[in-house]
Length: 105
Image 1 (cartoon, rainbow, N blue to C red):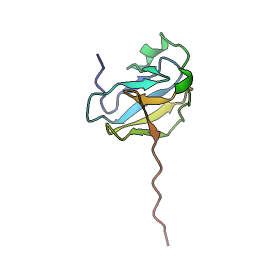
Image 2 (cartoon, rainbow, N blue to C red):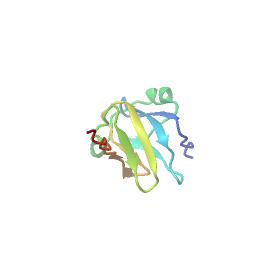
Image 3 (cartoon, rainbow, N blue to C red):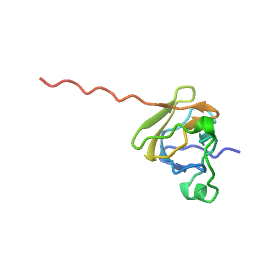
Image 4 (tube, rainbow, N blue to C red):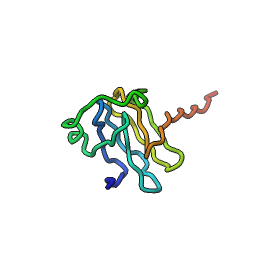
C-alpha cells in the first residue's frame, strides 16, 4: 500500500541520503522511489533500512533542484542530495528547467 503523497510532506530515500519535499502532489496514485526502492515519510524512517542504490538508478539528485513527472503532475524539491535517482512508479523524474527572468531595461 502506498502512502498518500501530500504537498509539503517530507520523504527520505532508503538507499542514499536523498531527502525531498513534495511541491505538487500527483493527480493519480503513485509510488515515490529513489535508487530503485520506495521512499519513506518521514525521512527518519528511511535511515533504518539504508542499502545501496540500484546501478540503473544511481544517477544522483541535486540539492535545490525541482524534479517533475509529467504523467502524474508530481513535482518535488530536493532538500538533501544523494546518489540515487528519483522515479515515480518506475518512471524516471526529470529536472525542471528554470524559468527565464524578464529583462529589465
